[in-house]
Image 1 (tube, helix red, strand yellow):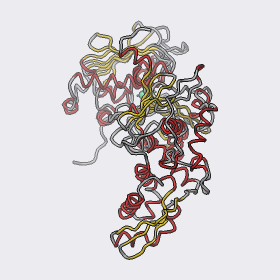
Image 2 (cartoon, protein in one colour):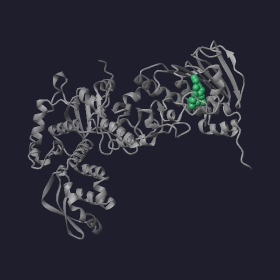
Image 3 (cartoon, rainbow, N blue to C red):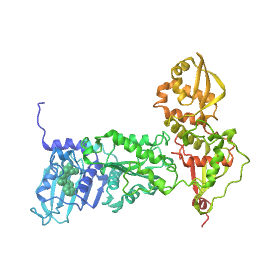
Image 4 (cartoon, rainbow, N blue to C red):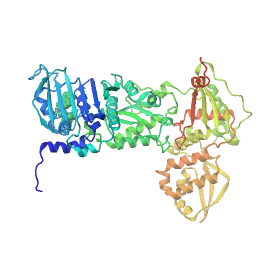
Amino acid sequence: MSIRVLPDVLISQIAAGEVVERPAAALKEILENSLDAGATEIQIELEQGGVKRMRVSDNGCGIPRDELALALTRHATSKIASLADLEQVASLGFRGEALASIAAIARVQLSSRSASSDHPGAEHAWALQVEGGQLAEPTPVARGIGTTLDIQDLFFNTPARRKFLKTEATEYAHCAETVRRQALSHPDTAFVLSHNGRVLLRFNVATAAARVRQVLGEAFESNTVAVDAAAGALRVAGWVIRPGAATASRDSQHVFVNGRYVRDKLIVHALKEAYRDVLHHQLNPAYCLFISLPPDGVDVNVHPAKTEIRFRESRGVHQFLFHAVERLLAAPAAGEAGAVLPVPEGAVSPFAATTPWQTTMPLQVSPLQVNEAMAFYAPLAAHPSSGAPLAQGSGFGGQDSGMGVAPAARPLPEGGDAPPLGYAIAQLHGVYVLAQNAQGLVLVDMHAAHERVVYEKLKAALDARAVPAQTLLIPVALTVDARDAAEISPHLDALRDIGFELSITSPTSVAVRSVPWLLKNADPVELTRAVLHEAAEFGVMRLLAERRNELLATLACHGAVRANRQLALPEMNALLREMEVTERAGQCNHGRPTWFQVSLKELDAMFMRGR
Ligand code: ADP
Ligand code: MG
């Protein structure tokens, strides 16, 4: 075959392969056109999953008679005129190929009445018929200002494509998802979707929050925390799941950049990282995020369907999103059911997301709590090398905690100034702490909660380069693999910086002289073996650099109070107080929840008790 230039219709049919792979993809393009035209009402009627018929009417600015044919012509657009425009795209569309592609593979009628009256034919609406790319002459029709695109028999002339279509129900479901996405990012526009004559979705004009509730449901709203952060012109607003409510599904990850729904690996990664410390690895975060930045900060012209984008400052965007969400989740009560953090108005600080927590739920320190904490920490606070408060005791002093006879559980003070997690009442089966707070009952998994407390303290101590060590009265000797001893021997100073003073006493034996003070109640042999084990696997250098948090998590697990250890009430209260000031206290180091609130309302409902 010799080289030839393809006919226009065939070019459009080829382009349609990329842009219109299924009815939902055509619908997305059409909805974007309506939104670009400023529509505040969009009505969508589908038949047979959109394959038989797709009719979209809007009340946007309309198209003048003389431009109807152009709208259906390839590379014809009203949205950009120059390369400079392309680098600043503010509209959803700009490629000028969607309508031409659709018109090449379906029977299309475009009817419209323009809002502007200074062009020929402005006195009424006009309709243009196209079939297989062949345009007819416009004819006058009756309709108000706006546009209707009526598409029948999608893929009628491209049977190969038709074969790839799924069932009617599946194609409809994709179309509905497309409408829901556009609705999420355009709360100022009303949407009505009907299928085979029945209205199945209806979204009225609403605020952003109300629209999210309409589209994603009340459960999404109550299981998420609001985020709103900005750094210069870069801003993120929206909702992220409470770690305790996360599931394995990735379906609920909605991201919009300048109003455009996108699937972006960078954003997904930033969010996954932000949850790393609080989410079990088999679970995925759910979120609905609206990111905005100046149009020239993002290249939207990298993908025919425009769902992939490229940020100019991708690293900066990644860091910004990561920090905004990570900080929000670090707030001690982020995992708490029912503690919705409001979106601050006009937030400007990149970490504004953490502010509402501080203003709506201050950690009240009553004199009683201070006394109790002082008594509890007295033997610990005397330690010579304890610097920053976070580097202090782990909350469980073991034998030296100075505990007397366990006092009775404390009643809640009047006037609502009880601490957020309340006061301990009892320990259950050696595993759970029961406490009572203003809302009702609090259940704590004491090992999981303490593990997080110790972990966060270890991290803080290491960040502050102040890891006090506890010298053992008698050094402990342990037999090790010769390779493990060889691996650690050049790094004994680095290990001392994290509190482990070890010496190699023979090619196969190590003596432990000190362990991190925060872990002094743990078994020194077990702790050292854990370090050696990880060092053997990753090497000491990697272990102390990129594997550092994993190592600290392992150590924290060894250092945390074990099940079946009897705790006295002041110990339990001390744990509750520690949890209140510990970042990410809602999840243990493995992402499991550490505590639950059972409200009085829930208890009443359980007992069918009306109040
Ligand atoms: P693009 O959106 O990339 O410009 P399209 O092929 O989707 O390309 O549309 C071509 C042109 O038709 C648009 O630039 C716009 O001027 C016009 N158009 C399409 N749909 C509408 C609509 N619903 N209301 C007003 N104008 C429309
Ligand atoms: Mg378009």
